[in-house]
Length: 432
Image (cartoon, rainbow, N blue to C red; front, side):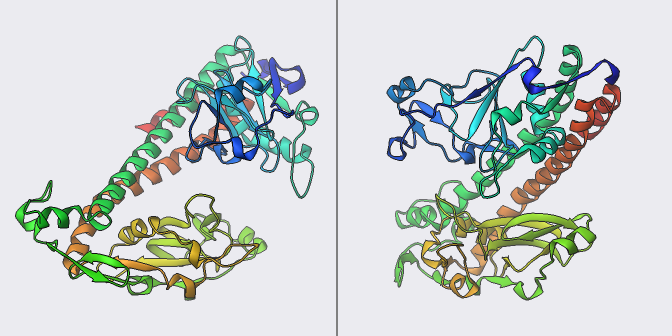
């Protein structure tokens, strides 16, 4: 099969590389809005796993019309070429935005669909075959970049179009299942967040009882877990009997068990178990320190986020942690997931130090206050959260397994090292 496949440079491939508009009409910062006519991609929108539209900026129709280059059409592939080089997105009919433009740190790869499938191109740009060549060609130490003239030297395998379609079908099936699992998890988390907000932020059941009504969706026994009035606290009105307490009172912390590993040590201990630091996965090692369900919160460099300071990572199973993350687990009746939902709604800006590298110290973390309901209600809420997050963890593990399979098959299929029937069989078995 692979003997039929050409291997050509992008300069000779059936595609066009398009730059964005960098002229005088390029949008200034004050021209971006949270919603609008045309999505103007930022670096956070194009990731290693495709597009992420959680934090978007838009320009007006008038501004869009004034720009000459850089507008996407269906089946375009977007590649980041400055700062973070090699992130990629695929603009297909399933993307919810109609008008989209790239910023100055990206290019558009637009293929001739009769000779090069745009999805096959997208898969290639995500593969190690592409990324290994990028490492050799990119320039700049402070801000890496991949100029178009160098990008054109990258070699791409070019199977017959029918083989491209078969490869896309196999890997696209895996991508679709991974996407579904992640979307399901986003829904599960949204359900948990909505329930938390109703009970512990808006106090809907308490307000209903004050008005002499049975809270929506509750029987008498469940409603009895909630008070029917409010009382003053140092931080404002709270349901009677509840109180704000230091985060320290509702979590167990395991920072004393953290052990930093140098890069060389991690290389010697490659294995199955995740190694975390600063709320990010750093590597895999051959043993573990922790076994359970925890929150990792940023201690060093992981807390800066332009909108809301998302500092937590929900982790479970066997893993290792270095000294750039706090390891927390719920206690005093509060499930770890309850603590996570509470922290998601708190602005931690006042507790962060460090002008160059943002940091949340343990001392400052203990200044964060958490609303603590009665023990009985806390335990009941934990019983509601448990099946949601059992499913969440199962979906995440399945998505991880399928992602590993996809990433293993991807370079071998695209390069012709693996025959299509073998890959199809492995995919069907994984999805069964």
